Image (cartoon, rainbow, N blue to C red; front, top):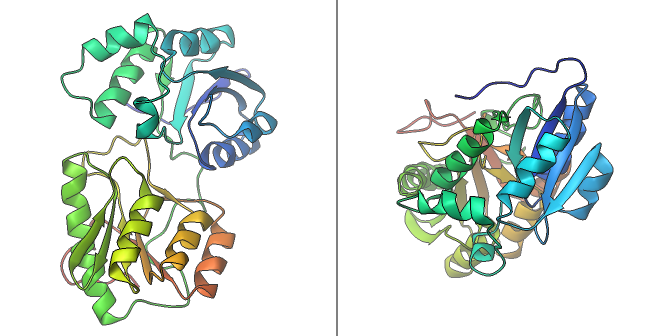
Length: 287
């Protein structure tokens, strides 16, 4: 179903870009690997700076699926990746679906994130455009297992990490979100439509200080879509509410601006750890 892109005779790689820094970081890496990048960006979501990091860029409104397909066909794109989120709140306020998007929506029994994205992928594949996994070429950007900062969680914080890890799995199964905020084995916030930063703010304010933030892939995660991502902004928000630990899934979480993020975490006395799915349940600590 998914595959790593292979470049043939100068073939362009398509980038369906949402918000955040990930589309820019990905584009820079992909171009270093020799890909030409043709991006479709979303008005009001995608960072306009992306235009300086790709070979071509096309701007569309959220929901203009046919325009997206035509843009890629015009650029002779046969392989593409989806990167960066679309704020769920914008779905209720700024989406402008075309007839093709409306027909797709009519086929969905439930409006779950992955179901929507899989239907979009099917629509593109019917037009000869394959959606590929977004993890290729990301050595040094994906979180590895272990403690990534000099500061390590203490035993009490590890209890919260393990508890939050299991809770995050359950909310992922329900397709609610990827992030939970824990204090003393109590769930103080669960990420929903507001996104990770707002969930951290809300949870941190309730916890007062010392909150543990856990973010992981949904168990049914399709690696073509919506990989968890954290970065300097995540640490900034955590520091503003005096949170103490950030735990993420190793091998499946993007570290945006990694060096800056970890330096900022160290300065704010926030421990950052990467957990592997196999070794994180129960008593095992990442080291």
